[in-house]
Length: 189
Image (cartoon, rainbow, N blue to C red; front, side, top):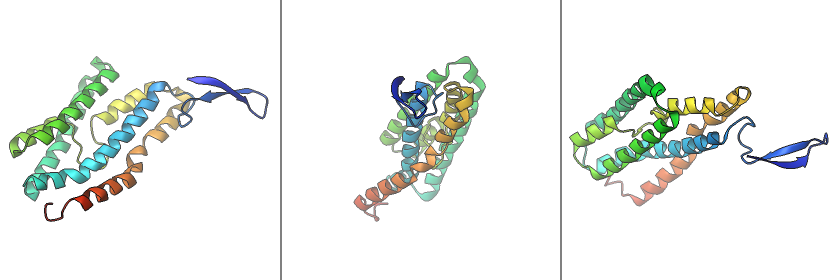
């Protein structure tokens, strides 16, 4: 990860780091976790904006949209608690991969199914996040993985870079929403 670089003002050779954003004690998996967190935060933000509009275009009433959004939150909470009870039996990496596969399956299922009751089941069982914050099973899994991917001395510095990422994408989500809404007739939504 580190290659030799130039000498500092004191004449000591300083290692050039591949990812200068990360603290020096962070392992390579920390960069992947931060990148995936940022991408997921952007996707979650878009879903929180576009899901109600998509469901309205499908013909659902406001109450039904609220029930589906509530089911996604309740399902995420139940999944997070369930994984918390059994996570010690599995590797953190395999649980993160399983959660990612479930998230992909949820998105595909939501795009293919049009009826309320099947969507309600998918919303509860899946990992679709209709809120702008990260309230999914990924949060505790990533926290555990991050804590093991860095030295004790640099743990706080790594978490200081990890936590604000979900809010830093709000600007881009707003731009994407505006671009989407200008292409969609308000009468359809």
